[in-house]
Length: 355
Image 1 (cartoon, rainbow, N blue to C red):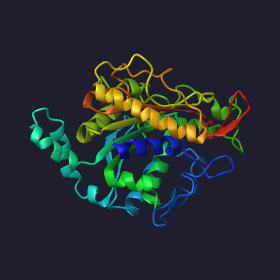
Image 2 (tube, rainbow, N blue to C red):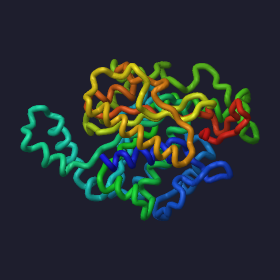
Image 3 (cartoon, rainbow, N blue to C red):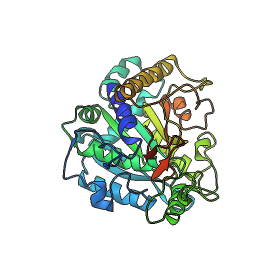
Image 4 (spheres, rainbow, N blue to C red):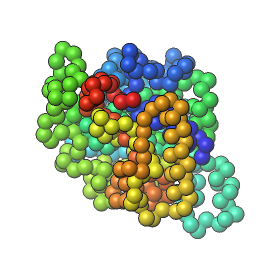
């Protein structure tokens, strides 16, 4: 599980905010050298991370460009269509060796999940299996940074050179990136935010670009909160997502959200009550991951909290349903700007994130 620990730390420190290399934003990962053969966001879409809010159609454009640049290490598949007929994508990243035997890996994972598997066969299958981590972004369409974070993490995993953490992840794991869980809500939010822009961005929380009109981008086409639909699975977005999770059976499932702009950063362990149908091993690993994240946040002086809010009791959450297939379900929440820039109540203006 070491590669999963590394990946989740990479996720929380790098990809959750869509970092822009500007006066107030650090590099994606300080000191990293990137392969020039892998196209940057700016080369494909004309702007850098954090300079614009990427609309749904441009998410597809960039992921297609990444997959085309590294076809032996990346694969883009459509797993569902929204009510407004927008595609939902799964971007799969792994080493050449792992990607060449995807079908065999998925077959072995299903065998491991079968309680009838003889104990004598378990160890051999585990030894030959990579860790699978699913990273799911912005189920609420107006929680803008998650989608752009997915583009940043996909680029980083494919293009970083000589990075020991990325090398470890590629060697021992397969990463499933669900970049945009709610494209219909995302489209509404982008349209509202774009129409309200003046000549420049305005950090004032009372400005027009932060005044999201009804019905807003949080919900899907039918104004349903998709982070309440994991149990009932009434909507095509949820049905498709459950289908690929059952196909892959990831060890770790991370669901990326935003919260109020005056907040900090949240990662598990979750607040009580927790999902009761968990194993002692799952509960222990959640604490292990939480401590690993906390250590890295402390090293950088980033503020965070856990256990105070965001429970995982209801099985309709993206942070709780995965427990029922043996995964570790995690919610990550960062302070959101609901636009490009937001001035907090303490007077600090932040771009995509709050330190």
